Length: 289
Length: 252
Image 1 (cartoon, each protein chain N blue to C red):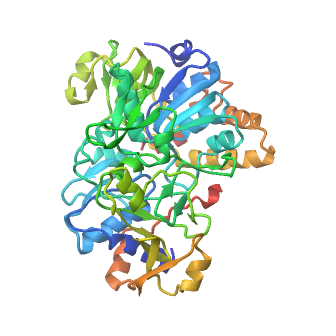
Image 2: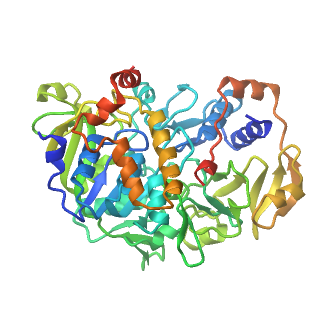
Image 3: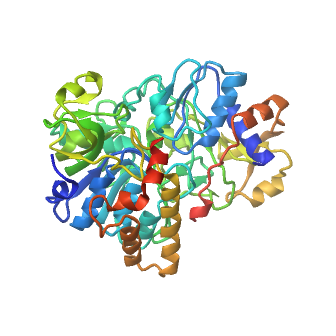
């Protein structure tokens, strides 16, 4: 059981870090914020249906490569502003894949396979991605894809609760995070509550046994994203998106300006609680209602 | 909300059948409204996965199912597992793909728009799960809320969704799976040489369509007028709440 800063202290420069959750929900933002403060740099960031958490990491300049099936927000029209800035400015390399190819790559890693095979995606641009080789089955003549394993050094995930043995209580939906957990060398799971094993045992169908190598209790720590106890703060997310987009224009494209704005919005110069203190009790209570 | 928007939602709805299993994707409020309209009027058995939740039986939820919304998860009829979402591709789902670009062959691009030197001009959100949802299914659609020459183009920069029938056949996918590209102005059906318009929205001429489309507009053997909204449809669509039609305009 660790605090966020200690939990990510071993993330090395250049590491491949997967971030769980999907769209506006289930992102381990206490861990993401600690990662940005630790600032190892040159990260390879991996996401499935990523939200603006991934945009925040890329926009802050922490990543050299983005591997994601999708990154976006729901509830307002916007393309991820930090990723747009970084990619269109040549700051970050992208490996384009879709959810099916991503899962195939993670499965290959988890199961020690030289590659896994996949069919959907044949004929698309994704078949030319760095992890993928187009192939033809000699027996049937069918086109298919060989998908290389995708190593994950650290998976940063969120769950409802966990015990000290690393048994994890999922909320219900899994966001596809099980693939990250299975493929990762190290799994850090941020939770709303640390509980006794007996509490988990009341919900056996939602427990993933020994899924965490480190547990980080961080109540409300998904903010501004949603969780089982918190509705996502759409106003914050929309403001983030709008302000980062505007800052790109105001700064003449100077990418360092993105990092500065993100540091301000996430209170990165403050301690673990600084962000939520900045949001305020009134707003948090509204989102918990 | 304009009449064209409502007509557009109704046009999406009319493509849905009673025995379909519809997968509503992220930020697809218009498709969700279309599903509700179809279920209310002619497809009571339409099965829907929306907001990454199963809507079993007559179950429904509030106006806009944001993916994994707290209330939606609390009220779920069954738990949706993203990790197993592609385990049952033999049980095809119907979907409506979107795109930064859609070309005259019926391919869609959500990855990004690139210049002639392959430098990124506009980074998109990514392909998500659409390459899978549109691969083996016998039936999918492309929905384009923003009918403009920069979206409807001759060739997409990248292919996320393969709609081109000949290209699909070459790689062993159901060739005729793309049934239509639907916009607020028109409906295009795949023809021998690419998309052909076979339906025009109320008040839209072929000249206007050609002006607002980035590829040469071909016409099908006959071009129908989009059926006007019936009173019942208007009442239901207002009752379901006004649609927030998808748009990437602000971000461009």
